[in-house]
Length: 398
Image (cartoon, rainbow, N blue to C red):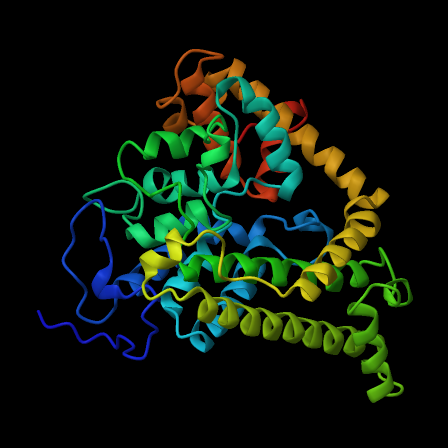
């Protein structure tokens, strides 16, 4: 069948070209209407794990308010930034978008609080890492297709899921232990863990950083954790808010926040675009392989913006992530995840039937991995419901 997909012909030589893709583990005929990275993106969007992101928290627990970001809205914001950057840099937009949409698939409920406690509980069994869990989701846990487990994504997408934050095997740190899920998958497919990911994955990772900082400022202001006045001494942020209020005298606070955050995203995106284009030109890379084998990432902020970024993160850490209201939510979330994990590990017969079939004896490493997969796949709301059903004697069993 002839392939009619509109593959862009103006991609840079160092972009990920579909005709050069290393393919999928399980062979499938090509689509007549979509390129291979478009298919990856569509499979991610149609996955159960992606739909569950709607009720997984970013910072606030899901029921705290309907205007706060969730993992789903965050992923969509990252995808929008990544796609725009990829287009401007003549990279593969479809791959950049697919990676942006997939990057949080392995996150457990309750944000980083859920991940931290799951890792602590899984240390005796190989630990827990959300990037490794994202890999488990897309190569094993999603079960939609007749011929294989997982989504059977392309090599380039899997590489980006695993390595978007950089190489996992570093020459001067050979003793660093790989997450167990990634180490096990490396025996099936070589994702070249000692190299950087392609340019699209690097751009998606930076897009995540831009989206995260800006929506946390937005959410923190709306939640009343800090005020616009508190931001006045934060480099770049304070200046942008000052300029917005100067340009629009009498503008209400809601619109002021929106306009300032919009400008802040624009400033970061523009800096990233200019700096990345400059690095690419100076590096002399000609192919996607050159990008992977280069000795440092090519996508990144200028030194000035890196300094701004670190000071924004410092402000958010001190004024938002360690705010007593978030500490209380984090404490409750940790107790819920810990209680669920320990109960299922010690009493796997309490797992739903389809999960119980996968488990082994109480306390066994196989049982621990099954429990981690089950708990990590929960939404905030489902985790709270499960906790109530299992620990409240007045609640009916589901």
